[in-house]
Image 1 (spheres, rainbow, N blue to C red):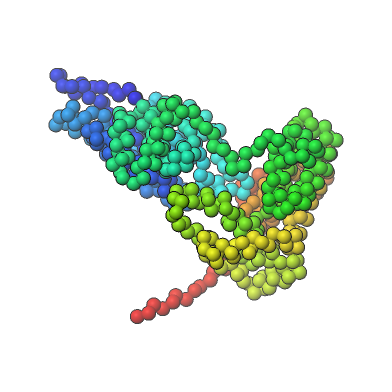
Image 2: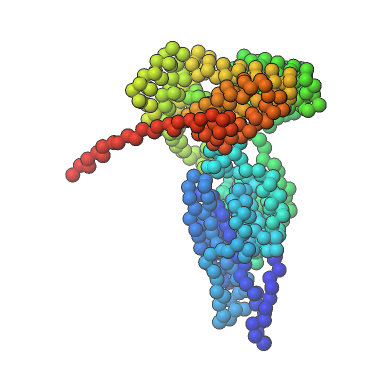
Length: 527
């Protein structure tokens, strides 16, 4: 338990704590932050401690959390007599005793805002990640650096309690708030007994048994009674590469290339996986000729990583396949904690545009459809709602997924394969001159991400960079050319509209794309 400064109010009076214990909870929607605050209030009330709780609503779409602020005065009403503490309604930086965060970046926000201090604060936070809107919007890898968050938590908190509470919640069949409550109670920062906390859960009534399991797991980890088990990856690499990868490629590349083979094979077929390794063989040969072995064959590894992602580009066929896999439906049931006999309805929202439809057609019909759409100003991107858990919706998605054997005849396939070959040829040529230059060209594939408008902007930036720098400017030395490519790539990742890239390349900024406004007459309501 935190040391609580005692003060004598007057001669002959009992010593009382100088201040209340301040608790700030940051939880995402659906994680039970309000229930956690209620549990704390109930446990404190059962021990006859004065307590006060307030909440500040957050915003949707993972751009912030709902926060709950509590103050508990660690002296019973009997000790206080006719005196009552004055408790605040809002938190203030530097004055938080316990900071609770249900997700790691929310803990980072709290640290950034000054709510975690080394002199005072116990930080109880889950280390799992739910990526924010800004992270998902980034053109490249927009994820926050988790290692920096770990270091900040260890440095800024007086007592950090950090582990993956989402994994424990899933294993216990409960919501993360129960594990947070257990970790908070087990941290020793509260003047509340374990019995009072468990009674608060029992008194809440809803799913008490599962919540108590989560509470016990959180308590055991916070007190050191249990050792945290790392969350298993969805597909754990066994440490043994496939036969061809093991025979033809150096050990430093096995892990990435074996994952690439697995992904590409599942995306299309074994022949496509063989093509994946065939494409990497010239890169490895060029790197070996340039003496790339001591550098760990990084050019081959990075090319293999981005090549697997590119060869598995997102299209309607892949989306339909992923949405109807048994593993996905089982994961949804687990996330909503549905029982064996409980029905679960899953509704998909699809909005295919004219480009996505044309991508499934052969090159001739696709070109005519795109020309027609451009000439008539039509996009055909109307939203479609499909219930995956209904027979009709499931069969429609499976029919889309069944188009996989015909993917090689589509216009999108030919376009992507041509761009891939162009990219690989540039890497192989550069690898014979300078490994750093080849690596920068390989990393240009980071510009290709997502689908729809996001992918089209990234592809336009990729083509512009290739035309201007990668396949031109032969007068530049390899080191200078690599630096220019890196500068242009970072500019493109910072601005998806292409203006920063145009400035880095010394080209005019692209014209803004018009966005049509459609006016729809409001339907008259029946009298």
